[in-house]
Image (cartoon, rainbow, N blue to C red):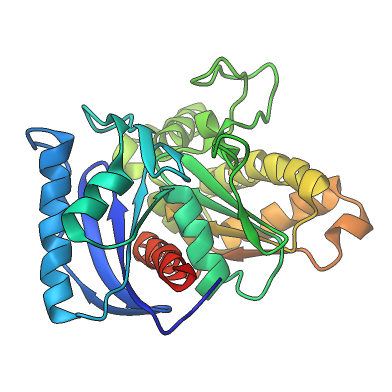
Length: 315
């Protein structure tokens, strides 16, 4: 169920900071000062800080009906239970939905952060109005979310959409879970920088990691740097290999791509589309679009607020 007139809070829980915002539909009414994620005595202490911020926002917007939290880890969506946050110490087996709900008195929903991004793009962004959308965020790692037949698809244990763990080379680099050639081992910001440094070294040029970020490589490619252009073609090749496999499996209407890597624009999207065309039939390609995400840093807030608003409407 969906209602764009409900006011809700979205909480974007990151490894460094936690951002809160008040939304009504796609409209971001207010944001709050980010909360440092690290340095709290316990998960409960951090949840209390979040709850206090929620209460302060309720005083300004008494019509707030629910709160949604997106976290970078494995979540039991039905119970609102955080299994583990790999980058935040102590966050193992935390009943976040219950604790935050008890502290605030609001209905609460807890979601994986990539799913929240996908939901934002489907409800209000680049995938709005489509039935089948695959959303990706390309940054430190590779996250993904699936909208199938007009609903978020989470899988049997709420772990679906982990596109970063898909293999693009069965003889490739070993991933975190022993899966050879995991996309995330090639497409993360650090991995791209390391690959770019090797490419420049092979061309007889020495580059530092800070000169090989996706943004820096895009700027170099825009000036006609042949090595940078080669790097973007390789990035598109890795990504296109994974997306083509997904397209054969799910036959989506659109791929929505967000995160820092997507800011390269045509440097990424043009060779990516060409790669996809070389690997798919005309039937699968028909109507398929590959588009940049509408939302960037605010995607988590908007997506989690939308999930919260839907929960409030159902109640």
